[in-house]
Image 1 (cartoon, rainbow, N blue to C red):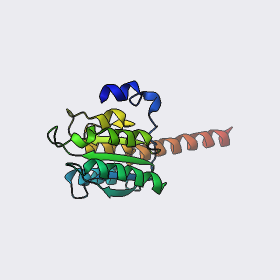
Image 2 (tube, helix red, strand yellow):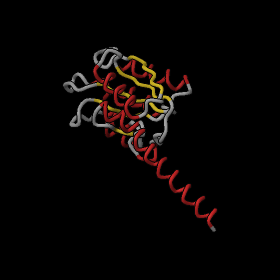
Image 3 (spheres, one colour):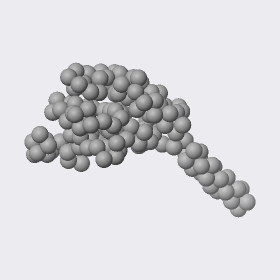
Image 4 (cartoon, one colour):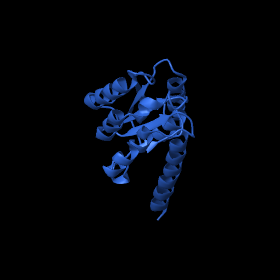
Length: 175
């Protein structure tokens, strides 16, 4: 499957969508009761508390998982005001993560008009979804970090720009 999708160009950088720098709405596809979802919410709320999080709870393991993941991607694409999608689940055995190696899931990610960040498993886990997604994160928490700017960094930049503007105006008024 990997070779087939490579030959179709689905892993190519030119196929990838740009992750928005300042998302307003992040759609999360994962189990609503999972630690992964709690971690994602904690990271987003710390880094960018102004970002709206929309959960589309999906099954992330077993026979129905692929179908619900595909439906979730399609739902967010029809919703139209989601800026980026995080597809995630915590770690597990390769069998637990197998739905993220499904060809239909890979094609749904590739067809998404909304950028998809995959945060599946732990740092050592790689799935087909990771290769097709627009950005791979090693963990669900990392996916949340990659999806959001750090508010504290933004405030530091704003303070620096304010000081620069004050210096420019002060210099203009003195001249």
